Image (cartoon, rainbow, N blue to C red; front, side):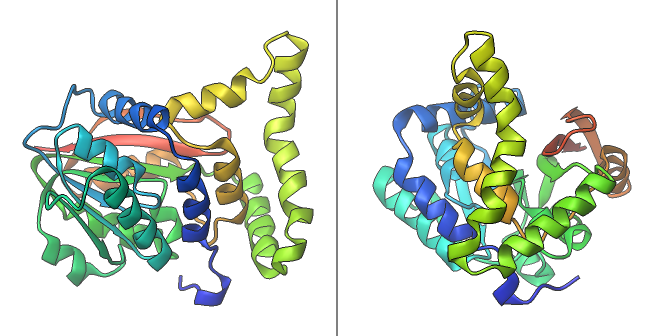
Length: 269
């Protein structure tokens, strides 16, 4: 499935706005998220491939944990945001390389070689050809290496509804996108905020979301509503796909029937 460039969501522009809000607390939270996901204390001596680096936050987290990092993204503005983050926090360290590349370019990925950790959290469902991208990045996992994948959950009819919402958002002039964005925001966050207020917890769900991975809940809403291309998969489909490619599931975290990403950690033995 190919997607015309003028119909793609401006992921990089959204990440640029997020990066302006980035603080030390968010970076530390991203580090803890990586450690928890990989069940490790540090990444010293490890190589880390950040597929679709976005803001560069998790590349920075990996660097601070001791990894040598290669970040790439298809969106030129995402590449620029990642570069600005490196300049701000890691002083152009040679242990952190940043490139523009595509997960759909098998030759590009093959040229990068193997990595101890291949990290593709919430990006490959936005390539326009998710299964090809998943197969390509699997080839970058070194022997005894780890693959981290997060892919949007297949909700059946609800997922098809989101396809319509996302297409509509991206076809509208920027000045009118609020007519899609705000109703979607209220649908996604309204019930949780109301429950917290009624229970006397204020905006705890909003604050906890920020703490979980160091991400901005508002920027993630914009990314979710506008994020096109958009594909989904069931957990069983993802697991079967990588088992056929010689990887073993180490752990997973799924969202049940809800929307959002199912997380998977695979090992190559």
